[in-house]
Length: 397
Image (cartoon, rainbow, N blue to C red):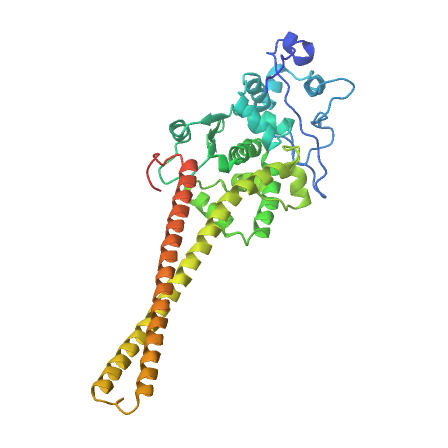
């Protein structure tokens, strides 16, 4: 997305001795149960906003009366600046330093096609796009990513938000389509959380912890949060804020309403997450099913072999007995008994030979299944290598 030129007339402060300030998409207050919506981080605002404070208004997603959304933003920001005109420039900038810096940062950023595609596919709205752009997001190679984010060999990360820049590991594995978009949205939400005032973060923390408890049956989530507690202490709320916002479909209405300020349709990014996670879960399920099949077949082969060996030993004993009886002229007066006993022994031997063949067939099948398991393991390692920036290509995991 390329940004249009910003006006620098009096309504933007340009002719009043202030540097030109590009407009920021503002957030539409959303009813969140009985709670007041979270304001954008403004040092002079309290939570909830006090009577008489100007409310930030998000422009309509579709143009009204022929105006583009950027034109609507300019008008909206001009109105906000008009409210602040009686305030001296120093006071104004002291109160809005972060907002001004963000606007200038967005004005200085021109996303390439890959970054624009991430925004579109993650279905970020104007506010989400703005916050993403403030951090000049980059798609990085493994070495670039590891250096920029300070990734250690034992870490397994796909993105990082430094406070100034969003770095995304450029995963190109086709089966993991959507992973980069979800990571981009995850990091954007870190930037969003960073800009909330303290009271807003506190209220949001209550909702996030409630959502975490509601998903308490998810062991993977618990493991991730435990890992963050060790590797990045003090980041629990901002990580929950990003994880829950991009990965969980069922949320409390108040929390769902909060996330609407950043996404046109949050279910899009949640769906992308579910899609590529299914690749891993399907592979894991195939591995589990195949492993169970191998174990069951191995037990069956062992049991069949034990029974076969016992029956073979018994047959050998009975054959020896038949031979001894015949050598002792035991059948001399009963040729029919000789023929019957001999036929029975031959039938038993034929039966054992058929069982031997069946066991060998099972052993061959076991070998095939074991090879399939090795192939699945290699596939899993390839997938893991594709998302692990610290693994040297060609090495195992």
